[in-house]
Structures are given as C-alpha cells and as structure tokens.
Image 1 (cartoon, helix red, strand yellow):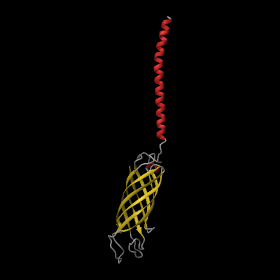
Image 2 (cartoon, helix red, strand yellow):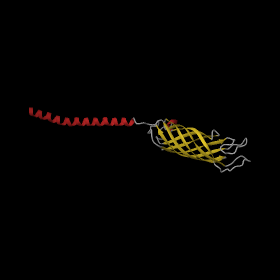
Image 3 (cartoon, rainbow, N blue to C red):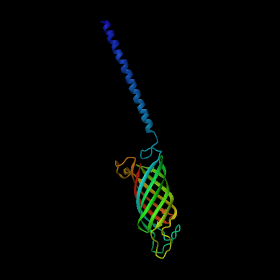
Length: 217
C-alpha cells in the first residue's frame, strides 16, 4: 500500500513540473509582447496618428478668383480707373509634405487656367511650412514665384497679351481632415483634406482667395 502511494506521488510530480514550466514560458512571452507593444506606442507620432517623420505626396484641385491692382505691377500695364485685371480660376497642384513631428515643410507646383475674366494662364512653384493639428489638419504659410499671362487689357493699353508677368507670391492657408469637421470615419490617415488659402502677387498687388480638395497619400 505504501509503495502504491509513493508511485502515485511520483506520477503527480512528473505531470506538475512540465505544466509549471509551460506556465512560466507563457507568462514570459506575454510580458515580452507587452514590452514590445509599449515600445511601439512610444514612437514619435504626428497629431493625426501617422509617423512623425517621412514624406507625404499629394495632389489638389482648387477654384477661386484673383484681382490685380490697376497700377503697373511686375511689368503689367497700368489699368485706367474702372477697369481691373481679374477672373475666376481653376488650379491643379502636385506637391509633397515632410512631417517633422508637430510641424512640417513642403513644396508644390501649380498650374491655373482662367475660366472667366482677363486671366489666361498662371503657373508657379512654392515652398510651405507650418503646424500640424487634429486629423491631418495643417496651418501654413507659403512663398514662391508665379508667372501670369492675360486674355485682355483695358482698351487703349498696348502690350503683348501672351507675355509672362512674374513676381514673388506670398500666402497663408489651412487644411482640415474629415474628423476636424465632424465627418469621422470617411477616410483614414491617407485620404482627403479641404484646403482654403489666400495669396498675393508682388508685395500685396493682388488678392487671390482659393478653396479646394487635397488628396494625400
């Protein structure tokens, strides 16, 4: 009887040791996974949850309007009183942003076509810099160089309508993602933003409000 009890005790110990070892292995694996996840979560992130550093390409379509001063600007002939060089525009943009944590820098090129009024074509290149906020939100300033040509000048004003009149451009603007305007769930970190900006040509000699949609990747 005593031998039978001893045999039972040995058998129980044989099963208990592997089980204990397995539990220890599982616990160690879980702790390692938790540690790894914690390390990933502490990596730098931009305000919209994307990585803090990288390159974000985008394309955009904008619409708006521009009016130039009547005085001579960057070689553009002066316009008589009551006559303005202005018109509605459609603009295509290709560019990229470089996120740097809570801020960003970037560059873009643009071509605009006048759809009414005196402006024929515009094209230019710009640099941007600003702050990131919310779901893909951006607040920025921009500076660059733009070329303009026109369909028409005031009667009696001579000049080559196809000549490109060029000068420095300055502007400010903002972009907002869907969650910023209460439309969460429509896109992820890559998707659509709404852009609104105002710029001016050659030291505040024009007024150019524009708005449109940016598709970023």
